[in-house]
Length: 441
Image (cartoon, rainbow, N blue to C red; front, side, top):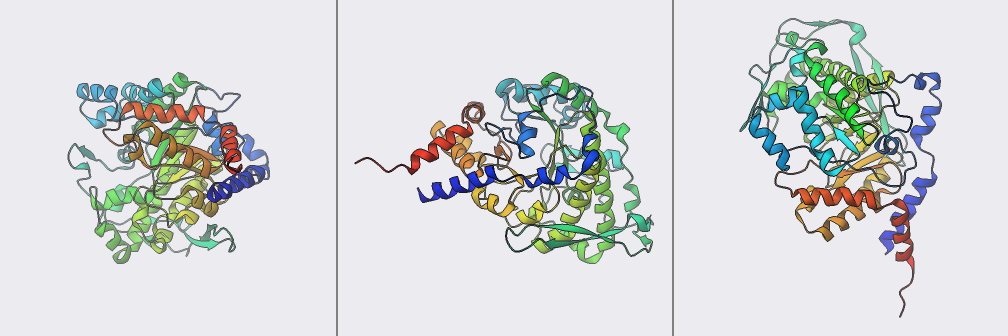
């Protein structure tokens, strides 16, 4: 009961405290009034998920699930039999739309995420790839050595992490002027060119169709991979468990790795803006392998490029919520909160109440253990209620702490979505109030 009281008190404080983002937005002036309208048009009342991401008052937590479209669904497996190539499924407009809408038709989540892959934009920057059913993503010519390529001084910047006081442990990355010298980046990197959006029109077309199909019933979500995570594939050439090649490069050829990450940050910022202008109402950045870096190295090789990417997108689309998710990021939360992302996605190993204390007013997403969906209905409800109670009544998007696992029962997914719609914040407040009452004897 003492824990419930503490969590209730923290939730009440967050509900009463004005959002830090709201305070910042009011000082940005007319710039925030310039919002690019998607082809489907902007709804007068924005979706619940978008409002919750901004920390606005809502009556319940919106809910969607990472990998909510996928192999656990019979409809997806049936479609995959007809279209066995993952590249075809994720790069054909009609199939993207159909697969993205499968969970929407079944469960009515509050977010409909584009069916795609973090590697999808790579051909648009000069990197061909394949996806093997057994080995996963494969890049035949990983970037490990160099050809001559130069970067002008204006594009060269360094970033430094600085804590903001001793209380919450939050901070931010500060951009520092570059050295002013042109730097040679070497062989191989020259194949990594500016993003050619003409090779990604199927993404924009699919997002526009999703906005038209979903209307105001849910938020349409886009996503990209982080510079560091994409670089692991570009350097390793495939999925890895140890990331020895790219980690060695950080010491043996830091200029090459910096050049690669800088170009990826710029390309992914452009890709995010493209998704937003095509119809995405929020975008998630997956720093999937950021948790493989110790905090000191994350400060050097992931955080600065995320900050650069997010700042670029925010300059063009300041009102569109951006979520940052990294698996295994319990030791990085304050740093993630300092990148400028509106929402921090939490994996299931992080205590939600602890994350709330550490992140302050930054909104959060997550973080129910995905294996709970293999349990009976009572256990699922207990996990969902625990997550909602600890997150509090403002700035929370209910999700799993990772993607839906293969083999997850569809009825369990349906149950969690139904719980998210029926459990209101007012009901949770009443639950807390009753828990404080002395027992009758």
